[in-house]
Image (cartoon, rainbow, N blue to C red; front, side, top):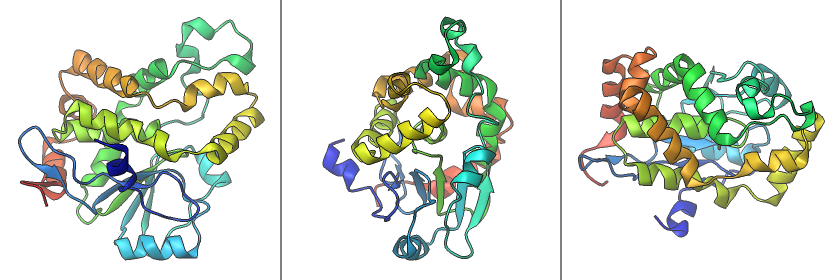
Length: 260
């Protein structure tokens, strides 16, 4: 999948950089994800009135916010009237899970940042029920079109979207390309602002830079880890509370039998 194809997915919403449609992805059984039903993105706190109009015209019904309560208070979303906001934090605090990385436990707090691969496995191992509940929200009747987002639309959003797409039968290489596309959209201004927010929490900028990469191998490694532990993304979600009927309902709405 080429960069121009990925760039064409982006919704031009003033105040955002990484909101995009995940329609048009093939599945292993010959289907395709439908356009206009599922978006992934960064936070919406700076969306202007023009952006709100575009979201309303898109038919947006649900926004699932994966951020912590503190993030939601500090950077509250702006949404069109009538859109249902679902607070679905994958973390209680941004520091959750850092101690799981044994290699950094003895370092000063300012550099105590885990590798992304370790961080991603923490989400899968410790936040499975929350991830499954998020997918269940997407499966609710009337939930679509929906937008799933965190702050950058990269890690928490990337994990939820990757597991959802995998459970629906989208191949790994397509999921990896979708994950890596974030690197096309998060520009220098966003990275500078994110680094400044991290510095305000006492995180060293050089350490934080490790968390801004979007290498395809990260999400490929996570999908392989899930299969090694559970057999498949579908089985993983089921083991954490997502009913098979819920996933089947989501598939029925989100997957077209052939390219649209």
